[in-house]
Length: 260
Ligand code: ADP
Ligand code: MG
Image: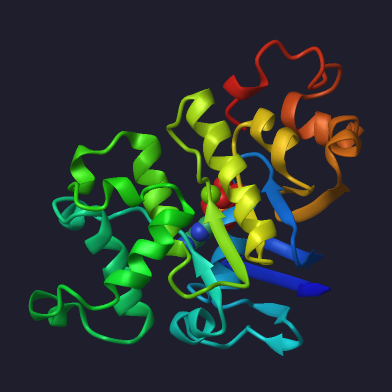
């Protein structure tokens, strides 16, 4: 089933066409990677889907409903989730309290309630933590956790609005290879179990090729290729934007070291 349908989407900043008329679909149960060199328009695309940026033109439909022109809060209520980094100020709170915060925000309760409402949504928060395998760390302050575990908590927080579509901007940034693989394997499992879809950006080509069901490649705001790992790996235009001509992902010694 088609969850998201993007048509003729564009965004200009002054004279710069950050996103220039892109089209793509996202199916339920799909892990779709949005890749491309720096400045390609990935974050701009993300922020238009989430409503943080207003599109200059085109449409983004979620199950047929137009998202362009809606505020982030309304888009969130339509079950589009996104993972945010746990803010410094909340790092001293426990793991479960951070997830409770995300739930409070989702249900439209102010954070100010929190002091007198330590029990609010606790069971729901524990359930989300068990989905990411962090229930045994519930009482620890986030500041004590290993980096990979923080990312799991952020993933649980991203699930607070029971998303049909989850947006993850560089979910594995700063992680070592093993942590990266764990997080992506977990994400893939959740996509299937929760029958949602994930749109993510990622620098590591290893991760993208190993986990994405499909990928779309942007360069200078345009969509230059779309397909599975094998197709993208061998696509001449993709190799050109990443490596210049002559080199390929195959003969690149350490693709994960490339900072596109
Ligand atoms: P990516 O995430 O792929 O690295 P971005 O979407 O951040 O790329 O940026 C795409 C282009 O739009 C770049 O040329 C960038 O400089 C420009 N851009 C992004 N955000 C803004 C902004 N708020 N104001 C002006 N230009 C922007
Ligand atoms: Mg970006």
